[in-house]
Length: 76
Image (cartoon, rainbow, N blue to C red):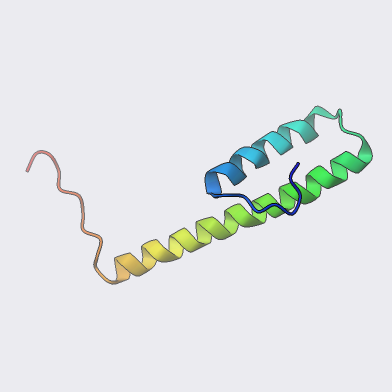
């Protein structure tokens, strides 16, 4: 676990979070490592939620500015 090391991007954070979850669910970690994994998982979850919120805000801004246009159907 890379505590205090910020993830490079959403995808790497999600991958690490999934791996951490699997590790914790295995029940094979000692108590101190379980606590560290939980703390890291919380950091990663917070990072992922923020990245999603930021992206959602960017999409909303683009949509509000009418920059996004519907993709034309191939039938037209």
